[in-house]
Amino acid sequence: MTSKILPKLVVFDLDYTLWPFWIDTHVTPPFRKDKNIIVDLHGSKVDTYKESTLVLQKLGELKCDMAVASRTSEIDGANQLIKLLDWESFFKYKEIYPGCKVSHFKQWEMTALPGGTECLRPALLIT
Image (cartoon, rainbow, N blue to C red; front, top):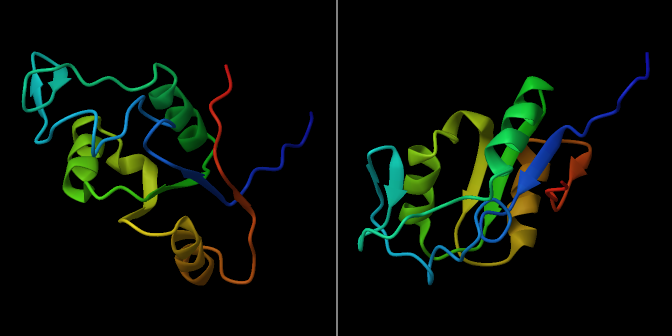
C-alpha cells in the first residue's frame, strides 16, 4: 500500500475557485432555494463548479481540515451561499473579509497551524 501524505489544511478561495463568479459583482444576494435550485434576488440561477462539492466531500472523507479565504466585500452573501450549499460542515475555518489574503493565512498560522505551515494553498480543482 502506498502511503499518502496530506496537508494539515486545504484552503479554498470562493470566487472562481468553488463557484464561477465574483459574489460581489456577478450575482445579487440575498439567495434562496427555489425547488432545490439556488437563485439570487432576481431569480437567476446560482451554480458552483460541478466538481466543487465532490472535491470537498473527498477531502472530508480523507479527514483533511479545510478552510475558506476570501477577500470579498460581500461577507453575508458568501456565508449565506455556503450555508445554502450545505458546505458549512466542510470548513473548519472561514476568513471572509476584504483585505489581503496574507492576513487570512497569518491568522491560521497562529490558530490552526501553530509551529508549522503544512498547508496546501491555493487549492486547485483538477479534473
